[in-house]
Length: 507
Image (cartoon, rainbow, N blue to C red; front, side):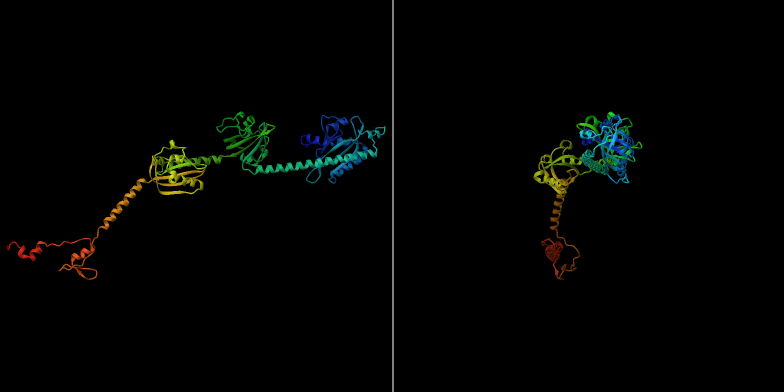
């Protein structure tokens, strides 16, 4: 019985406008017929069940109308006609005969186009006062042609209305199926696992990503299963996770969404996978009727994160030990740079304690940086991503004075990194070197040295110049060096030139 798609109560209320019109439906494959409870009451039959077999109903029709009934029905069952209407008498529980008009149409077919489901209305036309007045006294249920035409006309109008309602329902069903197909396509196009639950924790739907992540073959393996017992029954340490401590199910208790960054789901083969998930309540009239859960397998992400953290720690150790100073700042709109961190070399070179100055604004740490143009240059780096370099920046305030080599560059997340070296001593050494070089140049300029072989006469001691002219030795030396001569006479020459005056023995 449950397999039969009987009309919803709301649909019945739309169609039934009087106590003389009754909905019916026929499942051709199973042979089951659904009858309105009022229809059965009218005929005097049991109303404990609304469904009977088609043969039961067919056998209640007056034999006189059976040929027409069978011919009309056969035409519809072959698919030749979509609609049918018949006018007949039907037997009551008390063996009386009541005139009925039945109109209907098929609404479903199989792959061959053979009708498999019919729907329609029965209309009681026995109640009409005029009809009763024209009935013969023997109670055989005969009716005048005029009244029959009137009733048929009225039923045709009802049939038209029914067809319109059925077409509207079919259109709504088509739109619903199309909408469901789009939703399913959307669900299956996402990489996130998604499933829904009712308030008992049973899975009501799931997408293909959910099936794949959890290791199942089809969604049928998950649907109607208790989600907690299926994938969330045990903690990572192997201890049991009670239902009342399940964060997914807490959505039902608090009526709010829940986010978990790191938890465990259990795979089909009892392997655990790391997941992050969000559980969202489904509300109807402010009452929680279920939940939708989205989740991701973060097993690989978690492994990569650990490797990255290890790598970052190694990098941090390297940065901490490098001789250059390094400070990082966070940019805050519109024009603020907040000190985040720094290495040990930065503390030594700048003379500040990172823990004491962390969180302060750049201009508060370096009061003269604004007028020196450093603050504006660093803001330009963060805003436009340009690198800033300077080989010799002199900075001075009450705490620090010196020359610095600076390299500033942008980091992800609107952060700024400033690497620097204090080159004050190097600069002083360079200046001292330049001073010594200048002194040496000056000394060299004051020295004019004769070098090479001088052609000199062995007799008169004259020196030949580059033009071949023989010059007195004192003249040649004086023009080729800065030396000057003062003339005198040595004792030997004096005695030679002036023997009488300088020879003491002759005296």
